[in-house]
Amino acid sequence: MEPMNAVAQVAEDGKSVDIWTGTQFGALAGFIISGILKTTPDKVRIHNQFLGGGYGRRIWPDAAIQATILSNITKKPVKLILTREEDLAAARPRPMTHHLLKAGLDAKGNIVGWHHRLVSENVDAVAAPPRFKATGGKDYIGARGLDQAQYGIPHALGEYVRETRGMRVHAWRGIGSGYNKFAAEAFLDEVAQAGGKDPVALRLELTKDKPRANAVIKAVVEMSDYHKKRPGRALGLAFSDYHDTLSAGVAEISLDAKTGKIKVHNYWIAVDPGQVIQPDNVIAQTESAVIYGLSAALIEEFSVKDGAVQASNFDSYPVMRMSDVPEIHTKIVATNNPPSGMGEIGVVTVAPAIANAMFQLTGKRLRHVPMTPDRVKKALA
Image (tube, rainbow, N blue to C red):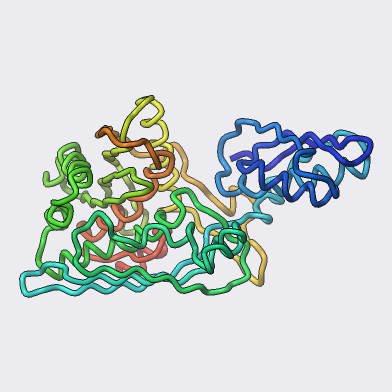
């Protein structure tokens, strides 16, 4: 995750500019910069560079904008490189969210009703104002994953309530599904317990009319040998859909009760991305997304105090180290469906699978991410 950087060269007349940047949305950069230069978008030429990391941070072209302003003043090419501290201070994190979930069960423990209410800042309002306006205030990014389209629940309702916090939020990898499915899949395990059902059996029952969903759940159960007892360890399972790609994940964890640190030893994931053109790319995308999800689930915490970001570098915003990365086992369950959503699906099941494994191991529920040692010790107490 290298800091943001960009190169800009404004023409002598100040009416056209060439920009070299890793910004994902060149059209957005062109629109904003054309306004700054009082020219037309066709005069803004974006040379998009293939740069890794950053994700949502790269969507907003602030480095390109600043480089353009400086180049227009000096009439010389300008390369702008933000320091790590500057980059974190200008970060656009995903919104903080609050979830309220309720489920109704019949006498046999079957789910007959489901209600998921999300409270958060509206990502579209901050990151995509035209779409926010066009949809009448909906949040396409942040509310993603509230539905339960793959589960056969007769009465399901997903609701979104905006809480204006004044934070410059943006899309996260997996967008809303990345955190909404954490709440939903962890809650589903609680529902299974309340209804006296096995969490895997319940998911298979709920997806019996959805062959693709049912298949990935069965695949990951078989891959992980889910019901095999492992002394000192436990397994948890979660399922998700995202942009017509389906996935199920299983986390095998242990716990150091003294330090509160959760250790993930193995992570199995089965994914149905539809038609697969490049299997190696699917596996690489899946594994990188799993690592991203692990770091977010266990370590990464973004703190703001009095309007200022508290982290300044990796000493105050740690990310997962190689020594903590588990063995990742990936299986592609290809189907003859249009490929879609593959780049982000691997994130979504990680946190709920770990939380569900934690309950199997300790009988305690973790309802917040990241599942830091302090939060774990508090739950155990």
